[in-house]
Length: 159
Length: 159
Length: 159
Image (cartoon, rainbow over all chains, first blue to last red; front, side, top):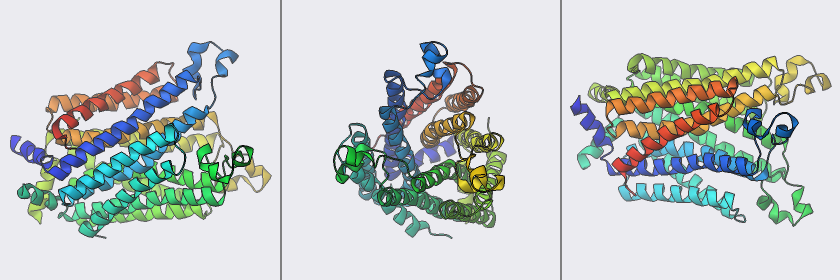
């Protein structure tokens, strides 16, 4: 079986696929960071969604008051959902794009701009930056994904 | 390295994988459309979630009134979340299914029905169509994904 | 083309990739189950989000009262969203990890712990179990994904 294992490892020897693996992992780690930031704000703002999460603050009414929404928590949660909505298309379309035999330099350009745009988007959401900072960073990542989708469909179209 | 590149391109020469690439890209583009529709309703209904998004409508209390939920915006957002909940399983299970060596005609049947069902689901959500239109379109996409998962587990089971 | 088909099937002959296919499918099916549980609670608690979903309960005001949130429905929905937030990174990073040539026993350990942690997380959310049951199961799945991401970046880093 070591022959097949070698063949597979070759998949990640392809430079465009290696670049995809690197940037896909980076944007996923960035998205995972949103969970920690949400937890941080839930604990510091004392704003929880589940009764069992407030049990350590006491029983009954005294704990119940921490079952509430907080603007900072909601802001991080919106950023997290926006990540899901945009990073899921990047993951799927980006993988197919990397497999469609793009020029390495073109592929790197797509991946770098997307990752940069999503990091700026998160900063714009959390600081927050005035608009159109967040809107523009969102649009850049969106346009990069559309560009990769166009290449995938041009290469693979099979309806 | 061009040898490996060729080998990879062969992955997308396989017809079932090409069909997967095409339909996965189509349903992801459809999902991405939900972001634009949400933005359209947020702007036309003047219903925003972030204070910085309302800054162009003036300062203080005059802008604050646009920080609100709107039934049309919330409807699109539910459709978008439902897409995430259903298209993510299709992406993962569909890729593994395409790699598991299905009959091409069977694979095409799965991918076409899933993509059609999700497009009908979106129309049913946005128009909206009376029930059980939306429920049925959801169930059809769900059943197609279960059918592919069964084939994947039958082919690969390794616990 | 049967030669290429054979080559592809070899991808799923690799044991680490077969194990990934099995566990990715299992956690996605578990996530899909959340849709059915949400539907179950919406129907039994009579708590719906769309006016067209309540049409069978009568017209006008008599149906309108079922357009409401219910704590049990919201709890399942939070569990479903938490699945999306954590299973999407596992899908992407886990695939790249399986392709990066890990030891089979190490890969199985990662996949089994992740799948187990997410099943415990769902039970902890739905029963619910007292904290830190849910928090710990979340953290275990999170740590497994970080560990795989480290291996992927070490193997593929291409910025």
